[in-house]
Amino acid sequence: MENKEYISIGKITNFFGIKGEAKVGYDNQNQLKSAKRVFLLDDDSKRELDVQSIRFHKNFAIVKFAQINDINELIQYKGQRIFVSKSDALNKLEKDEYLISDLIDCEVYTEDGEKIGVVVNISNNSSQDLLNIKNYLGQISLVPFVNEFFPEVDIKNKKIIIKPIEGLLN
Image (cartoon, rainbow, N blue to C red):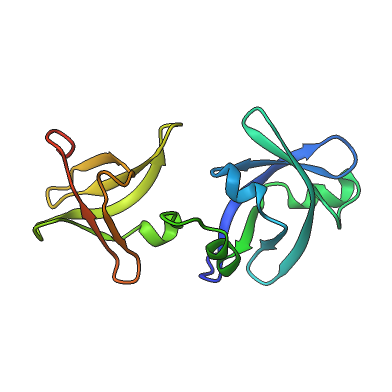
């Protein structure tokens, strides 16, 4: 379910044990760790769950929801995405942190106004986020999303200023 009021922070991939703990795949550990209340959304319903505990193991999280106490209650949610309200997520962001959904479709310009391209995706190389910037030829450049390269990000106007060094862009 696509909904602009909520953002996805993970997916219930399986159960963990018999006490209703969920094995959750995630993209951003900090976002998942700070979630206190999450939502399971589908086309015609919304289920609110309180996060009772969370721990991280290998490349997934083990999440215990207060409302789910055994495997039989959890199994029906296997494969469902976990959401938080966008307003909660925005309130927890630090300075110079952005939601991925807000960066997608931002136009990228040099400091002197030359349009470089559009952000089409965000990827991660385990040490930093990379903006995937598509230029007018359809080529995609992966640029580390760091302050040195991006001195200005204007989410409201969907505009990002880049300060490229030689060889950074295709």
